[in-house]
Image (cartoon, rainbow, N blue to C red; front, top):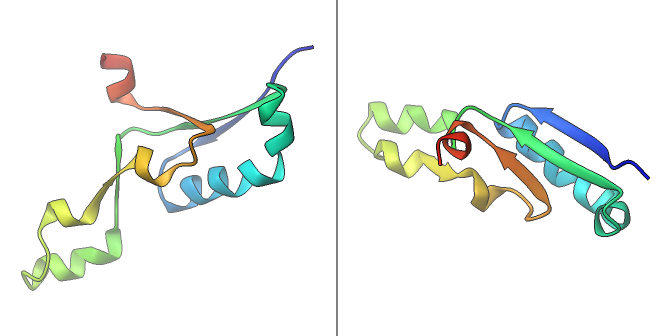
Length: 87
């Protein structure tokens, strides 16, 4: 049987939430290797964009607004980004 692939383009809030939302919905199929979910994004991190307001007033540093995308994704979601291709 061919594996079904769900590809999500964009690792922003919507892409990350969509990928994580799908995992429990199709968890059995993922375990049986019938389906895989892949998130494609340009960056290996996600930026909390509403936090830019805190940058302006020196309340947070730029690094405090970044989170590694691997920390935000369910382990069952494959992650492809530019850094993945360079390593």
